[in-house]
Amino acid sequence: MIEIKNIEKHFGDVHILKDMTYKFEQGKTNLIIGESGSGKTTLLKILVGLYKNDNGSVLFDGIDVNKMKRKERKALRQEIGMLFQGGALYDYMNVEENIMFPLTMFTEKTEEEKLERVNFCLNRVNLDGKNHLMPSELSGGMMKRVSIARAIVMEPKYLLCDEPNSGLDPKTSILIDNLIQEITKEYNITTIVNTHDMNSVMEIGEHIAYINKGEIWWTGSKEDLIKSENKELNDFVFASELFKRIKNV
Amino acid sequence: MLKLLKHLGQYFIMMNKVISKPEKFKVFWKQLLLEIEKVGLNSIGIVLFISFFVGGVVSIQTAINMSNPLLPKYLVGLASRDSLILEFSPTMISLILAGKVGSSIASELGSMRVSEQLDALEIMGVNSASFLILPKIIASIFFFPFLVIMSMGIGMIGAWIGGLSVDLKTVDFLSGLKYEFTPFYVTYSLVKTVVFAFIIASVSSYFGYFTKGGSIAVGKSSTKAVVSSSILILVCNFILTNLLLA
Image (cartoon, one colour):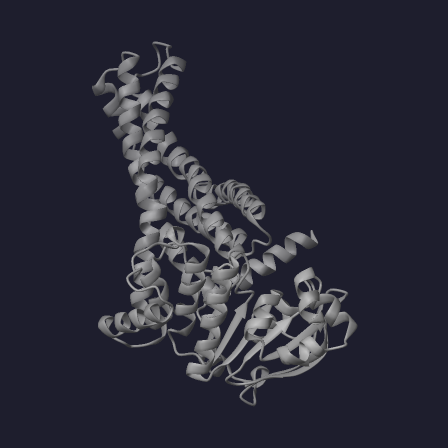
């Protein structure tokens, strides 16, 4: 479980995150939704340690990250799998080397053991036999799946996804969403998905937090979301004609 | 001034991260070999090509300017040798490498930054600065002196051929090459090269590593890397010449 308590973040004079408190539950797909510029990515970057929060605390299974020693923080980072918007695969490595990289860096596994684990992860994301393709030879959806494989290769306890569906067609988006949800259930991990894709919200939204102007305005499940009377949330979620119709059914 | 201080501060913070024990020596060694190929081996062609022709031009120009019969013929070889060893090979080749290698380092790291590959490394717990920049610096420091030695050699061959084209006898050229040779000039040249190699690799890495924005920013970082490295090379050249030769 990941918990944030009274998180604050400023960039110069701009107050990005305002006194944010929330719990991301284990074994569930936790969604952070909100407009562009609402603070979603900043929050995610604080969670993974790329940004430092000005105030408040981030707790991973009850342990405050800011109070951890350097070694403990490094060990924690190896328990976090991250899926980036653009995949962030290393261009000069092929698929196999990309997925194997964390194993090479942080484990003492033999080449055979590493390869076995890589093949298992590739199989898990339905990319068997694509070991030797370079990132430039992959489609957007394949890139995301390789990125998922790399994120799960170390058997993480936490999976963080930054807009996993951006730039993907609806069919591939659903495939990626389902894959994220399956992995979450299978390994009972804490998954946080940062998105503004409403299809994803309806598909996998178990535990949703709506962020607006740096604050958490609403929390609940996808069922609660449809019934919600929160004006700002409705303006955001049901902006398109299709979702307006869903709301009115 | 404040901006310059900010850059200096950020540069030293980055270097502090860069100079740390590699996470795994096996992986570091692999990265180092990759960088030696990228920054060193891939530059041999351009270095040899430029050195050969500049050597030739230096000897032709010297020969033309020394047409006075009172001046000994061996001076062409002597002037070519000293200008190649003292200035052309270490400084001009470093300026050329600042353009070729420096822009490549800055754009490589810049693209990795904008495509979040550096963030991916950091999140995994890898010290991205040390993992990516340290091999580049070591590869440059290790390989640039070889490039400069090759440049000196091929430059002198170019100078000899240039001399032949203006009717300079081989025996005169060779006696000029050997005349009052000071081995310390080669040491001086290699010391300069090592300093310039460090400047090119670290300054270009700095601009690439701290790229912000998209593809246009990568281009800007690359330009800044080349301009800043070149300026620093020229300033350090002046200081080192004063310290080592004056």
